[in-house]
Image (cartoon, rainbow, N blue to C red):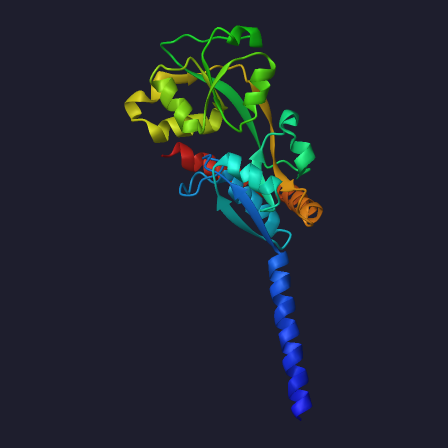
Length: 256
C-alpha cells in the first residue's frame, strides 16, 4: 500500500512538472515600447498591434506576455535572446535585422512614414537632395536614421519621438519623419488643442511598408514561434476579424 501511495505521489509530481513546462512553452514573451496607437502601456485605444498579435497567437493556443521598454532596449534585448520577440518593426537591412532575427512571414500591420512640419515654415521635397537644405530630426534606433544618412542627410538625433515633436513645435526643426498615424496621435496627446493645426505632414511618403515581428535567433523556439504567429495571423486576416479590429480602433480614436 505504501508503494502504491509513493507511486501515485511520483506520478502526481511528474504531471505537475509536465503541466508547468507545457504552460511555459505556450507563453510568448515579447518586448515592445510606447508607440500609440500601435502599442501603449497605458492608452487602451493605443494597442492596435498588441491586440492583433495577441489574437493571432491565441488562435494557435499561445498566450502573450508583453514587456514595455524604450524601443532601442527592446530591440537589443531580443537580439541578445533575453526575450522571444519584438514588434512592430520595419525591416531594415542596414541595421542587420535579417542577421539577428527571424522575421515573421505574415506582417502585423502596414504603415506610412512621412515628414511632419510646421505650416508656417514651408517644407517641400521630391528627391533626397531637396532635404539637405532643411534641419531634419531623427530618432535613435529608428530605421529612418540609416535610410536618410545613406543619402547624405545630416540629422539632429534624439532619444525618443516626443522630443522631435517638441522641437518641431518650438521651431527648432524644419521637419521630422514619423508614422502618419502615430505622429498625429502624439501631437494630440502632447499639445493643447489650440496647437494641433500648427503641424501638418508632406504627402510624399519617406516609406510605406509592412511591419513585422522580429524573433530572436538566440532563442531555440524562434522557428516554432514564427510559424505559430504567421499561421495564426493568416487565420485572423482570412476570417475578417483582422479588419474588424482595425475598424474598432480607428472608430475609437476618431471619437475622442
